[in-house]
Image (tube, rainbow, N blue to C red):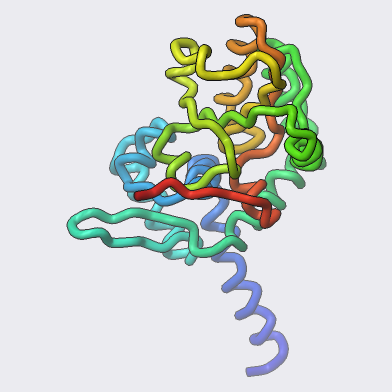
Length: 222
């Protein structure tokens, strides 16, 4: 193999990964699988895809070696191959927000049109936790919370929040978080909390970002 063949082969193999990611639905699936393991039916439900389409996208990601499968009896669950997959998605996400004006614009305009508050960073949340004057609220579906969550976080899925407000203390600030910066569960939660008289804000990042920093997490799977 000469030098040109060597380079062509290496770059062609690497291009398989970028081709696997080059679809908006597959990017959303990567973010979803950053929360834990999901069946194809669950992926379809959470991404508003048909089961057939979700299965096709998962197969492309599997062929690109970005996801693995976990067989449990008659059931198959998909998960990210390793933390580097989410790191790659996070880097792409941040690059897009930084370099593509349309991405930053649509995120800002969407939040401004619906929610009027500032988010906090992971570092700011750590400071608030250390002060002991904050309640951390996980508003993702309970199944995702059980697979992993910020240590000491309370789980109240967004669809149940309005009916369970009394479970939250009013004496401390509440920081809500969900899957990541493009997820709106936390925005919706803060809006509900503010209207109910709570002091609240959202974490700009999501649980996978927190976990990637090797910060304290808990798992609730029995």
